[in-house]
Image 1 (cartoon, one colour):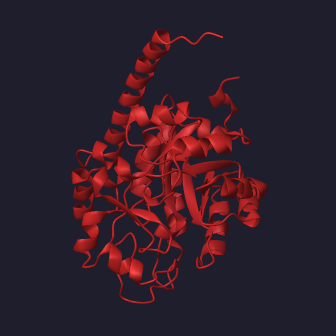
Image 2: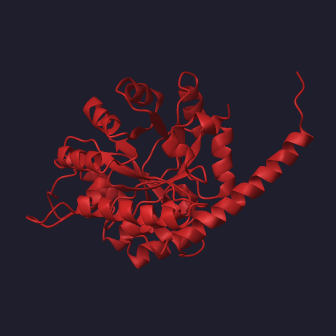
Image 3: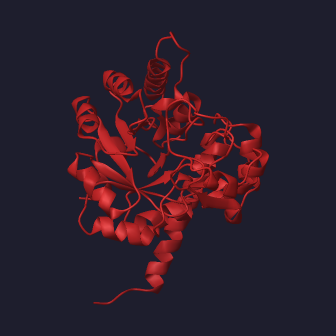
Length: 335
């Protein structure tokens, strides 16, 4: 049986082995729908759907729209069906909406659940009861083991170079330790911005890539035009890792600190602590004024439709497969 055939149905339904990672504020129904129609699993954080006090939950409206639009696409395009979508739940003590959002996602039978910043059995149970699978993001082997013990179906290995909240370990080291005991679904996050990187992730032991930063510079993304242009102009040297923005180490665009009227050093000295509740002061807000990005931004050369970005990665992925076949012919290993 092939490796792809061993994956849960929701993952193997993707036409390209890739998940568009949930981007806080940036991922919206337009982006998710475009990703899914182009054959990759699109996702968004549940917390992105924010309604005014007293209004019906916007998350419900988002899930209704995504579900219905993808259903219509599948009926009209049976030969190129849309990939499933995913919703990211921030499982953190400051997320007061978690219980409500879990109930809404269960009602709409979200096929893929991505959990972050804490693994909880009750959230996993709710996903499974609704027919979904759970992928939990981790930055080391210890957290990976805890996630599986609490019922996650698969893991997202967040390695050094990933945008936003990031890991510190080499992808080779992180994947090796996880694969020494876990044979279930594993995605790799960290500077995957090309088809070559996507294939390399699979060669290193991942089943799929987890791609975020390139999607910031797409037409559909809910990002400030200046943010999109900064992504286009940036290179790996423009990325800085700091815990000063949210209290957890993340990768950010260095020029965005000056644009927000602050500095890395100033924020690190302020003692910021993570919170997904109301802002406590007037310091720059993570993701809104200081802009996250992974180290793979050098591959992003223009703001384009999401389908064009996915098409470019798909072409590069096929070209990389051809190149690797040639390498294998050149370097046959005996014994």
